[in-house]
Amino acid sequence: MRKGEVRVNGIPAGVLEETATGFRFQYDRDYAQQTALPAVSLTLPKRLDPFDSPVLFAFFAGLLTEGSAMQLQCRILKLDETDLFGRLLKTAQDDVIGNVTVHEIAEGTR
Image 1 (spheres, rainbow, N blue to C red):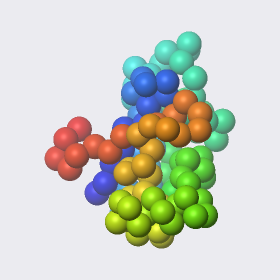
Image 2: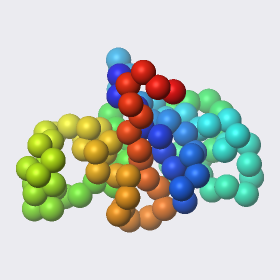
Image 3: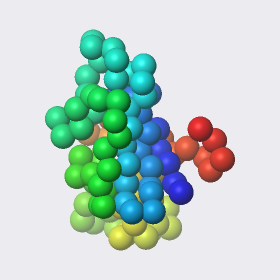
């Protein structure tokens, strides 16, 4: 299954992964326990239990480009426009709106 490391202001905050039933986001224990660090989003408050969803969490889908920018990005990177998670992993490492980035984790690591 594909995975991405979620970072807030460059600090590793947790892991977003594809599961057999959808998607899971789980905070890193150290990050979740530090009160000075912000949550990834209001809809994903800090906690130790994972968040599960049958679809990609709206917050992460909101990091994706839309319209003609999305079409151009998909054409250049040879991405499936309907594969939201694949697009997120390939395009959300930098130059996103806000302070959250997602960095693809190579298969077999972490």
